Image (tube, rainbow, N blue to C red; front, side, top):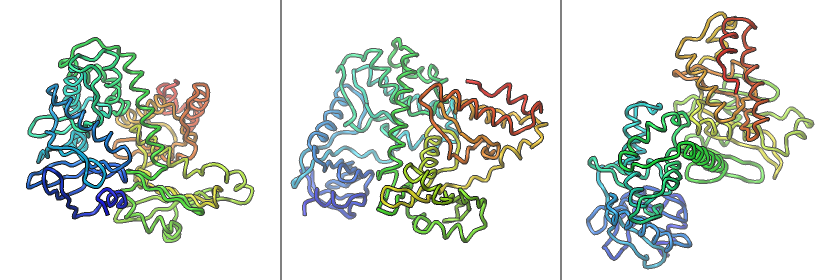
Length: 473
């Protein structure tokens, strides 16, 4: 069996040990760094005694993707943009193509550095410095007519205080040797800035200081803002689509009688719970046992989780629901939408639908447990006390985020907002909706706003304070 066939058949678990021969010498795979099943694999290797990073292209069109990778790396090198040295490339003996680059021992991607930051809040000095490094290198690329079309922190590698660009497949020479136009710069910067939480948008001018120091030109801030919004929406739509299909981040299994989506990294820990979710509900005291839903807590691998089962109350109820996505499906997407936008909600881990072919029946949603206190109890039911400054800021920030994203909650009881870890968390997302129509948004938002204020007696200090400060949009 050829290496290409072996790797295609291996799916997400390519073999280790794995050895084969390239023109550069005998190759031994030390570890797989990234696997796109049946398409592309990236590995740390030992090649004739020298460390390297090997990209294997094994899908249809492998030669084209390999050449794009090589062309991108050579363009970077030709224009003085730092990138790991290209050591070799070509066709594999029995199918597929490869690119071999230098391995930079002890290096870290900027994404790894970002994940280690104590705070990634907008304006944090550490976060600003890290983003500034990336923007300075992006400016250097733009100054010589190059763009990286997959701009994210994972494609910048820091090694001995030197920043490198990787992933040549996404590098394009729009105007080799000549600076990009302002519009081209705005389009490319939008790809990078659109991956930050929307709260960073207000710091756009400050963020661009590092960029403009290395590539001074007049940018149109309004056009850049529009491009960022478009990029963010495309990324959100793509991410939500991934939550419902089998991919690197999510594991999806479907059959005639069942649909199950789970965060792939949680799959092993949740396997028993996913197989028999009702066993966990039967074994624990319930948080809620209503007609339309049953909610319980369980512990898996030392972690507290919440299971919510969406019930079918009878044949009439089933007739209203069988033809559309379940409330678990809706809540799964809503929770991932909030997480993507940086709005606090318990992490959604898995969703199950019981089915009969295309017809939906009961469903389950599994999330992390949030041990916060709901705002009705935290702020007091009589509304006589105003929130402390930290709570007030966090509460108003959440409402601002929802307004910016055009999201209505649909059931803004104060018990559906929790105060936890210095943030306000949203739960019970069954009725949440993201609006594309401004008219429907205005109606839904006013309903949400009024419902939240009504949690406390009219004319109470808290109700008056909320009425004055909550955004009216």
